[in-house]
Length: 328
Image (cartoon, rainbow, N blue to C red; front, side, top):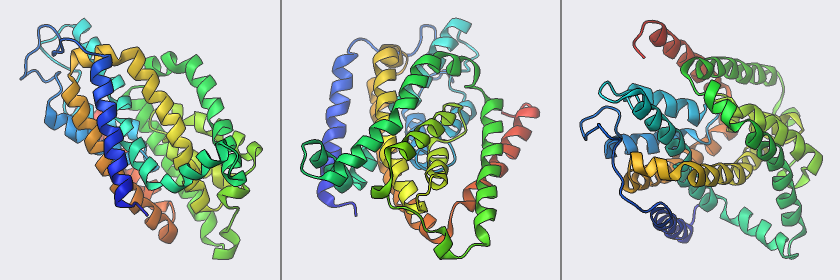
């Protein structure tokens, strides 16, 4: 349960993050040279709010937040200014890529609040006061390591070749089919046959397998939540345990990605947009992620994953049609 005091804690952390961000990348911020407030390549506060909502709603749903953010940015014309030069548009693209990752901070704080008790248990385990918490923390670290190593090696190649509309659309389509295949396989089984291990029964070897499966989500459009939930179920976790482990693993994975991009591209991001746009995006991601996660946990316990498979396939077909007809 999301207790009000945890909401207060998260807001305080959020404000601290924003102040820290502003101090770290202080300086004159503006839209790219040659652009103005009416330039479609610039980021308005309204667009920042929309991107924050999209991030928060989709980060932990098995539909791919990255793909939805790329689609939203494309529909709003961000990074495709007719009045800016190719170099300026490239700067906007670099800033936009960093922005969509940095506003994950809002979604991270939301889950931190929602799963505060589990995080507290792991912290108690860290100081030797909770054996189960220590084991869970170890599993989270083990699950994170493959993405940390592979991500550092291939990060630039992924951004150069896979952050485009067609790779995302293909990932939506085949990811949707994968969800439907798993759902159809489970339809004929009774509820007792679908039960699995609890998150406490997870071993480090199982966590490592989930960690390698998580690396598939480096392809934009695949969805980190999707592959880690499915990976958890494949190693024997119940659906609820797989969802919880996916969220907890995401706290570490997304935090690392956010910190990495903030340090590497934060200055370009805030010179291209501004600190207020970042604040708006993070805040709206925080609020919408709370609503999204609470809804998702309740829905999955009653209905399963199938709806997300149908959604991904339908979205891929619509987006692909629009793209082929030059409307996207």
